[in-house]
Each structure stands twice: as structure tokens, then as C-alpha cells.
Image 1 (cartoon, one colour):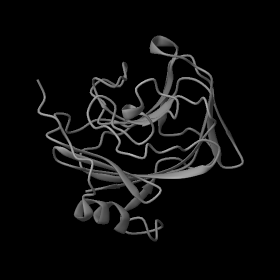
Image 2 (cartoon, one colour):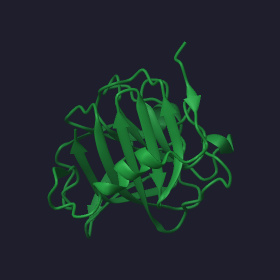
Image 3 (cartoon, helix red, strand yellow):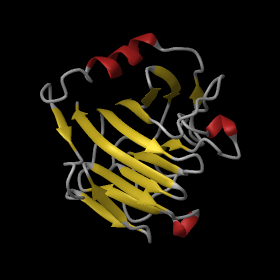
Length: 200
């Protein structure tokens, strides 16, 4: 069984690393994974139709299990900083999956799902958590109906999540060390307007 430890307190050093690279995304090794016009560089998986309009990528609908839809990155990534701007409506069930072990079968047990789901039945694994691996602390964050920023830092067996400047999850002892990234639509409406990655 994977050694999992969740730290609810702030991890200042790693949060600083995640934040530091986000100023000046035109340089510093950052790459735009979403070009604002197409889904080039991503492969669809599942029944959800993704659309791009006015610089925004949108997935609408979907459901649990095989009804969920994903966009899976063409590249694989190990250590990185990832900065994602997203908007979700209140019922949206979405997530950003990192280090996916199977690009043809994305899931929270075979990747690190940074959750976007304010109405998750297990609130400790709602928006800002790493599902099944690192829960969120109090107060449980909410992200519906506004633009938000996730900053995800992966370093070896450690993954941290910062939502709108607040660290929400800290995983140490993770077992997944490399793999593609996937964006999910599993209910409601989810939008992304920026997905930037800096490989380390």
C-alpha cells in the first residue's frame, strides 16, 4: 500500500516554489499546453465534446466512470510546475489529472487528480484536494462561478496544490512519478483559459 501522508498545514517552502515561477509566463521555461484556439496537443478520451471559443476551452456534461470525458496531453511529465486558470459552474465535476499511468484509462487511482468539485460527496476530497491521496483542510474551498488559479508543483514523490494563493493539499510519498496530464469533464460546465507547464 502506498505510503500516504497528508499535511494540512502550510508548506511555505514548496508553496513559494510553486508561486515563484508563475510571474512572467512568457519566459522562464513555461510552455502553453493550450494555445487558446484549438485542442492541438491533446487527445480526447470518452464521450464529452470539447469546444474552444474566444480563447476558452469548455467541456460540458459527462458523468461518472465511462461517461466522463478527458483531454489527455500528448507529452508525459515528471517534475514540473503547472499553472491552470479554470472556471466551473456550481454542479461541475472536473479535475486536473497528473502523472497518469494509462492515457487510455484515466482515473483517480492511477494518477493524481487535483479535484474541481465543490459538491463532492466526500468534502475532504472536494475542490483543491488530490483525490484519494491528500485531503483539503478547513475551511473547505469553493470555486464555483468565478475564475480560479491552480498552481501544482511536482517534485519526486511530493505534489503540492495551491488554489488562489492558498495551499490546499500536500502529498508526500507518492508512487506515480511520470505521465501525461488530463483535463476532465464529468458533469456541469468546466472551462479552461490557460494551461501552462514548466518542466524541471
